[in-house]
Image (cartoon, rainbow, N blue to C red; front, side, top):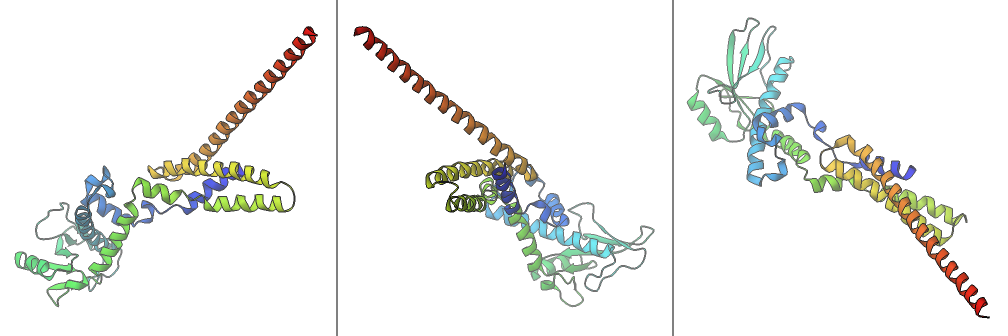
Length: 286
């Protein structure tokens, strides 16, 4: 049981991060802009598709960040809401002209904003030409005087944050399996314990080898079971799965050992019986 718990907990502590490590606003942006990814994992997309998904999520994440900060009373660039005002996102993702509106406590619209998380000046100029009366709030790279308000957030930083989140979510089954499967630490602990027992004379070298092999196999079986569950998205369920896997291995091993012992005993009894018969036959002949 010590071996099983050691292998299970060491693997779980060493496993990589998951979606809980990612900003909930970013997860919401990914889900809203790429709804098909709820059914298909990131690693099934090619590089161009992933980049498109990242860009879409980056823009929406920028909008969510700005609205949240404004409504929390924080300043975004030179913008800060007055008492009773709030920022609202457009209900439609394809809302023409504006992305965020500022309303008072009566719901009256005070201002509209276009949100541009980009480093492309041309993209921003095109938006200014199409909607010259709507103010643009953009990332630092495209802030230009009175034409574009600097949000204080850079496009490169947003891209890095989204990219990091995508990589943390972009784990294939094999990668997640290898993240979990790490038997070196428990094997090292077991080897140290058994090595100490051998040095103080509590067991022979042959016993050391047999015990180390048996306990090592138990550790590997435990982590294989946990890693399999973790790789398919089982999360913390991998811990009890690892324990069950280790105990199942012991059960199978013990049953196999009993079977081998029974077969050996039967063979010895048969040999003894044959020997007895030979002696009886020899005595009768005399």
